Image 1 (cartoon, rainbow, N blue to C red):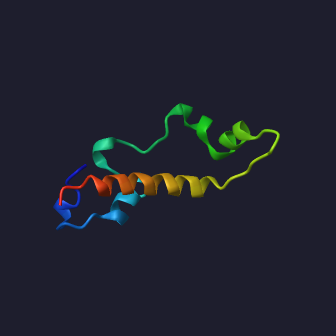
Image 2: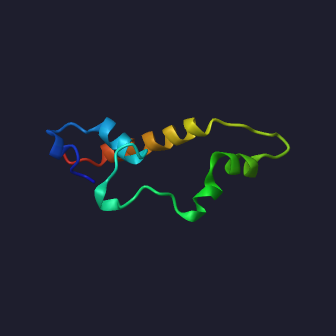
Image 3: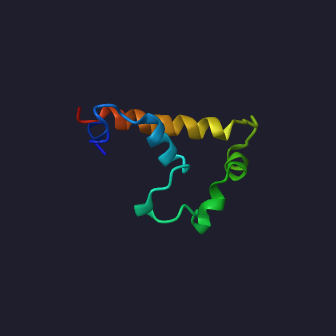
Length: 82
């Protein structure tokens, strides 16, 4: 994970890494992309029901997912050997 930029002529491949993490680009060594049976427990509607309380906070699950993916990409970029 620390030589992604090195293998790409010193440029960290943000778009390619994003697509791998979000599932658009399959990684053959990881097997299928099928979600485990417990995955339904973590669907946006289930999570939203779990956090609803007296304030009835709502959120955009897609925004949260994108933010988390970008945080992972930022971390990976910071640990690259140049």
